[in-house]
Image 1: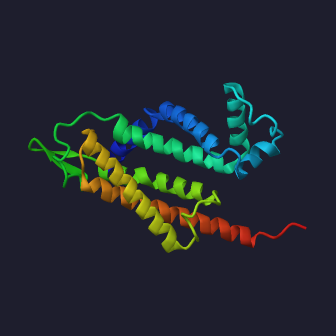
Image 2: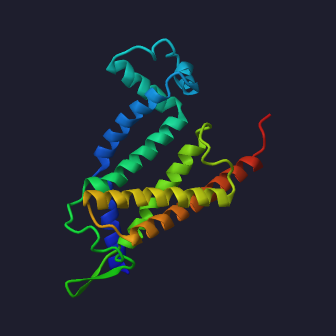
Image 3: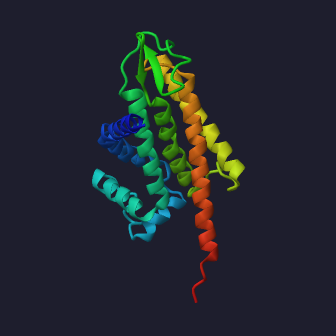
Length: 228
């Protein structure tokens, strides 16, 4: 049990440490495109309310950087999207960008279902199944958190448990399948059904955690006395 915990902890910390600054830079640059795509929309209220209405249309990297910082300080949607993109960048680094080429990506299609696997006649410990579940729990929580703050998003029409879980499972499955397909197409890693299954399970758990947190917070807000 201790070996399993140590293995999981080591792999998780390594997965967080290696791509951290890469994910930060990629997220910062992506959010510039996000700002550009949201220009002249209702999201400009954040910049206008901060007194920068006359400056947001000026050109230059300095003004762009100021505009970015203003949005980060004033827009909760911007911050939530930034955190979601940051986590996606870390996932892509782990699953695609930092992988070795494989001669046969289909060599382990049915492998990786439990914590022990046989390699060259030896039984070795692997915690990949747990890590695949843990990988998608924050992904789903951050996704639901981000889209919930965006009034234009129709992903969550209501906050029923069935709706949240269905959207969580569906999106996580499609995201995991896309990654596995790219691994197969680019020969980066192996295509495994177990990865899709455990990723989807992690999405289900993440959706459940988000719904519970939402209901608890919503109930607390309802029970708090209104101010005079």
